[in-house]
Image (cartoon, rainbow, N blue to C red; front, side, top):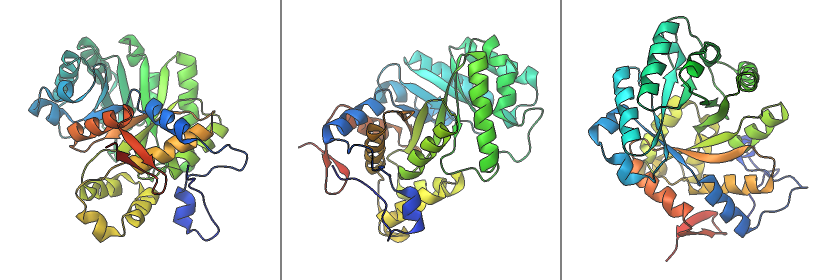
Amino acid sequence: MTRVTTSPKSSSTDRECAVIFFAEEPVPSQRGVSTRITALLGSFSIEITPRESLRDPALLQESLPAASRVYITFLAERPFADTVTAAAAAVDQGMIPVPHVAARAISNRRQLDGMIGRLSAVGVEEVLLIAGSMSKPAGEFDDTIQVLASGCLQAHEISRVGVAGHPEGNKDIGNAGLADALAAKNAVATDQGLDMYLLTQFCFTAGPIVAWERRIRAEGNRLPVLVGLPGLSSPATLLKFGLSCGVGPSLKVLRKQSGGLLKLATKSVYYPDRTLLELAQAVEADPDSLINGIHFFPFGALRTTARWAEMVRSGQVRIDEDSDRMEAEE
């Protein structure tokens, strides 16, 4: 099995983004890595926008295994009623809906209680709490901790909650702020008995994710981690979202791996196989890792992303040790 390591000649970006196996760690076997890939994809989740759900009512049922977790994105320009409708449609199709709830978009506790109540009424039992990208809060909620402390989730029997993880940082908060927020979320999860987990930004290489998970674990994090990966969208689309979402370091590696920005932009489809393989190698070599699942950001390519993930999960690919890529079995 090829190991991805740093070297003295590597650039600073390479050193940040390589998957590091420490000297005392065993080199994972190909069988172990293959098993780990299957485990990571065992119950993969995926995102959908309310608009996609309304446009294609059978999309989820036709694309995903029953009881898949489907995250419903928050779009400030869309009415909340669309989110409720999308969640109800997911339930009707045998899926587990996980709507995004953006703290800064909520005016007050009464509105929050009403939103969670409407979601609960259509069968929602889990939400993803995010702060939201608005520069100014709409009301009394500025962050997810305040929403967690409100008691509205528990009042409507929402006991499983995802919160955002930032392997490549967050320019609006800073590293110290992120560390404080994560410590507070761990405390709330323990105090309130919530089944809480971290869902990361999407990344184009495993190094920042692995290094970040090890660092926050050493600092006391005990929340499990779902890793966000881009789906099988066009590189041009991923570049656009990557720049807007602040995934800078791994974006540089993506450009380098693809032979530069121009070559990347001319490719029709991006595959996250190398990142998935690197993650599996790192987790297999580190039994204490809290990384335990994969979440896909398909950016409009839900069908093809779900089909590819299922193919990999079911073992219809082989690992090319020379290129550290996955290839379909012939």
